[in-house]
Length: 212
Image (cartoon, rainbow, N blue to C red; front, side, top):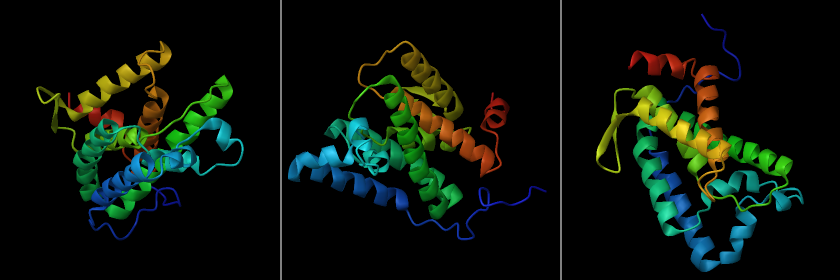
């Protein structure tokens, strides 16, 4: 029997409160603020390494609620709602919220460290890092679910995660994909893997192998 620690002590309340929808609404409101009401707020909320070094440390967290355009917001929010709702129903709202916010923070910190070490200054924004983490968690809990890529190609959720991971690794290593933050996506996947292993006591690799 595994000894319970602070890291793997689960919430007693695992009820479902549809917090995923609330996260979608918050992202939409932030988009309204940064794109229409007060565009300059983007520079306070998005993650800009040079500003983080000046004390804007909240950007390591708030960047995940800022999006660069309506299509960016729409795609991310559809993904968050579709996969996040299912994961939230499985683990409970409190657990899901903890996971989602920590995935975004972890992705932001690793991205910042990478940009700092490489001397790169960018504007990092978007919920993609956390959403990639949600996708991996979805694949762990619903390994036989099929996701239709582009609405046409059916792939089992674990296969989709493996394909996305390979694409992100290739793009990061060979600098493909332009302004896409591949390292942030990979950070979200890594965090989800560690979260499953440490807190959920589940090995995603074992789950994926069993569904071949």
